[in-house]
Image 1 (cartoon, rainbow, N blue to C red):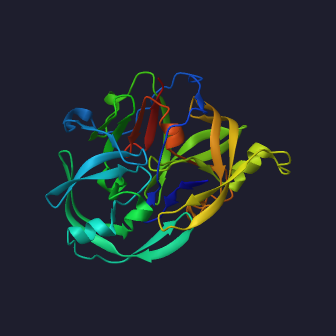
Image 2 (tube, one colour):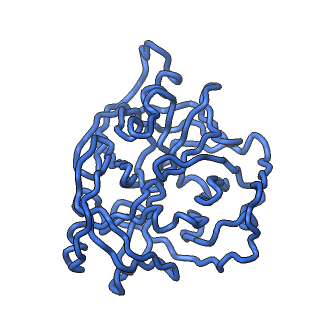
Length: 317
């Protein structure tokens, strides 16, 4: 059994999701009280929001239509865990994109130098991003023509509406929040939003949101908190975590009874444990950490990520 997952300091990405039925989401333990940011800019000048219909590729990942230099549309996977937009070598060659400077990519299995392509104009709905140096990777490893990263959404509030199968983007603003949503605050590290208000068995844990990841993955420190030192008698299945460079890392796939994120509890969470290079680069190998993938995210009705406010909110069914 194998699952696709990859991360990089240049980009963070993974592939893909079929929503399982094993996890159960509990109601919030307490109604969240949004904390107003000191000196926050008023929302009056915010630009109109836009809605894009979500589609699925052959691997059941969320995709949106993207125009590149006026050509397309091309289906790009939405990856909130990637700080850079990525393009397949095949599409870059088809569009005759000029080469950019090489970039060092940190995947789940290690790091390597990759070639970039220069995209003069990338359009997602009404939003246009100029002059992107997109790392090039093989389409067979990506499983897609490209991945839309945070560099195209960095100052936006992004709403992944799984119930309506729509993506909404707008300027950062609090008035779009769902009244009953659970709000979780975080911080940035290497361009990635890391949620801090998470606990497992009373121990603090860091959470990386990754809408491009097929499965959620925890590190060794988290497994130790959950299972203790001996781990004797634990039922697990060995799987392979496949990076976007085609390399594999062995992982132990188990079921975690309960995890708390903000005021929300996830029960019977299917979770792979692996010594991903991701955790080393973030300096999170010695503290409990979790990469939260689509196997859990797709159970929510709506997930809102506000990159400017450094927070995420989760709306239950």
